[in-house]
Image (cartoon, rainbow, N blue to C red; front, side, top):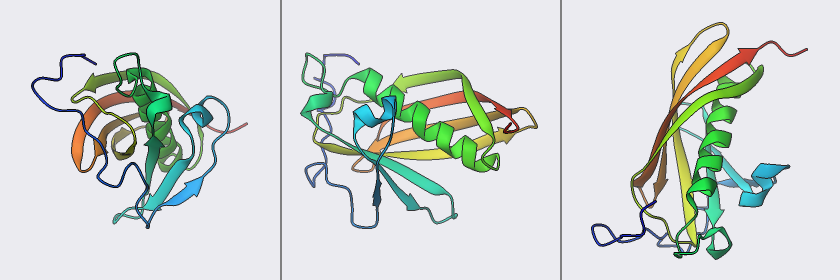
Length: 150
């Protein structure tokens, strides 16, 4: 992320980063737990939607949410959507191409809007957009290897 924020101000949640009431808190394990709890809800299409509350502990030296935190959430959230779409088969990220669109300053509730673009027997392609207060802050496309559980 660029430290030059003269073109667009940093985005912060109007609700000081609090998850909206329709979201359910879920604890994560491993590396994803460093982002805090995962927030979930069912979308209009019945698929799971994912969000995370980020705060100052997720900031870089310039006072914005670190790009690595956003990339980790994007990877984790898209992987969950791929896992769901594949019938909960094992899936591994092969490639993830991220684009930062706007800086984020915590506290902020970051929501993932995910779409499965193409699904094959062994590969899946997905796109995601991270949003804060309805504004796009990052987008990504990726490829996942999908294998049957052992």
